[in-house]
Every structure is written in C-alpha cells, then in structure tokens.
Length: 277
Image (cartoon, rainbow, N blue to C red):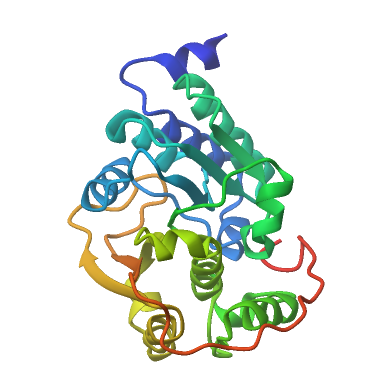
C-alpha cells in the first residue's frame, strides 16, 4: 500500500523513484558490467520535444529501464498508436510495467521482457505487436571486449543489413543496427514517404569514435538513413551521478530508396541470452 501511494504522489516521478530503489539494491559492479545508467526525466522530455512522436507512430523503447520515455510520452506527447518497451532485466521490466500502471497507460502500451538485440520483425508479429516506426533508446554502454556471445548477433545483422560491424564496436552499435533493421522493415512506409525514425541518446565516446562514424555512413549509403547530432542541454540523471556526457543522435530514413543493395543470406540461429545477459 505504501509503495502504491508513493508511486501516485504528485511530487514523485515514478521512473526516477524506481531507478533509485533499483540502484540501491543492485551492486554497482553488476550495473557496470551490464552498462546500465538511467536517463534523466528532463533529458527524455527534451529529446522527445526535438523529434516528437506522431499519433500514427508505433514506438519501441529499446532498453526501456524504468520507463522514463514511456512516462514522458504519456505526459508530454499525447496519443501514439502503440508503445513497446523492451527490457532484458526482469526487475527493470517489472518497474516499467509499474510505471505504465501508475500512469493509467492505454492497452496499446506494453512491456516486453526480451533481449532487443535478437529481436526480428517476425517476433513482433508473433507477439501481436506493431513493428516500430520510431525507436528510442539510451542503450547500455558496454565496450566490445565485455560483450559475450556476440558472434551470432553480428552474423544476423550482417545477413539482414549487409553491414559488418567493426570488431571495436560496443553494445551501442549493435542497438543502432538492430533498431535500423526493425524501423526499416516495413518498406511500404518508405514508398509512402514515411520512413522510420531512430532517437538515440549516446555517450560522446560512443558517438565520436571512428568506427561509429563509419557505421552511420554505412547506414546512410546502404539504407538511406540520414542523421544529425545535438548536445543535450540538461544534466544526466542524478540516480547514478553521471555527468552530462551524452550527445543526442537522430537518424532519419530518407524518402528515396537506398543507393546500393546487398544479398540477403539465411538467418543464423540466435539465443536470447547471447549478448548482454
């Protein structure tokens, strides 16, 4: 009862409240290995104001955490067609579900306990979920040498997009490629001039590395994505005491078809626990 009352208190921001509870109970070494850090409410609100979702958008929140983007969408953006928060940590997935419940979110807002990096378009359909037209993420920041079992995901992304990630790529690059694949899966939207959108909050280190710049260029050349970058003018979450080290990247699908094409190879088998388990 006290928990329920706290979640509904007008001075409480539920995602931040739950993030503080989570960080107080979860060892910092575990959170570092998983690359977990939490987005400030002001950062989420500002990012969505720069590129607002449309009422026709199907949003996927990749690494939803405690649901800060879901909360911001419900409070600030009005109606969207659907929201799917994907989260691999079972406790955080439950936290996100509590946030949706406390906000009286519509039935079109769902939480999916899953590994975003292994999701394919058919998996969304199998769950009765809309394919995303808009992916938002503040992805976990895990360096390449700490990524376990990445070979199968690398092969999956290369077979579907024709892009080979650098061996130096960390988790951010994997999230970006999978998001581009999912948001670009419905080719009819591109023909109609309604290409998908990606809204990523990234550390400057992840955004500015040479292999990260090359990846953005590959996405532009191979699949018609363009991008622009803005510095976030607000401090990062006080939950984990991180500094304002994020840059905000938006990647837009172009109206025209990609310049080049690639051969689609059979999909490799992937395991949900392979990466970022």
